[in-house]
Length: 338
Ligand code: PMV
Image (cartoon, rainbow, N blue to C red; front, side, top):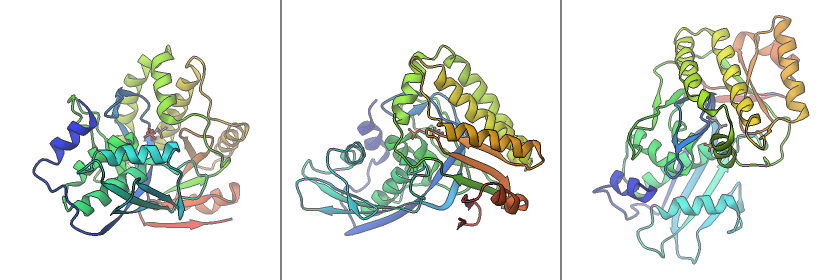
């Protein structure tokens, strides 16, 4: 099955004509505490394992969309038009291809990201989810959030989790068409939880997550161990979250991220996202933890680390790690400290 067939089946009976001139939507970025690393269906972005994330409140993508009379789609990111032949613009255009009513229909997509530049989160997740939401409004479909999650997944896997605030599980599903592989919000809030974005390196990653993921699946001799471990981590993580057991949650999230990076290191040739600063910062986190500070981390497809801690330790964490961008995922507010 291909993406176009999924879209056709999802939008059956719905209008393919815009009902407004311009639509605008927001979607938060999300950080996985239990990672997605590997696709069982590359075309539909269906994962090998379920994953679980926390959304970052008001940090994410604001996207405006309109239909324009032009030869090409116009893609604007943070006020600057993106060149047609960049990977970014091509990914957006290929996604838009799924929704054109005629081959000559063109869109203007303007995205403003509220994520700090270089946080390793200029992520496709919030971008594709915001775009799917904006399309929903442009065409007046009024889709359920879980259907938007399916559309967003077709743009980028982790975007399936950006359709809600708070904790979201991206269910594995078992259908070939992926209609059951979508985000489901967890009925639980944790107002005391804090996430610290620690920007160590603002450079573009050397290899995209899509490419690195597939390379790991294809070449790591340990990949077959990943899915089983992931299932266990996900179960334990959910229990820790519902118990509001911070230490257990931190231990699982940290171990899960390290296992994902270890898996990448075992690919042939290896994929290494960590920089010397990443390693130094991990050691620093472990040193602080040994001295009694309850702080854990997670790391995605880049060198930056994201700290996990509780509100009660915020002052101590900021003293230990100055310059951290602190996110309160359950208050829709962020504070930037330098
Ligand atoms: O959705 P993608 O293709 O950007 O992959 C995301 C991969 C990780 O961020 C490393 C893990 C995750 O679950 O978000």
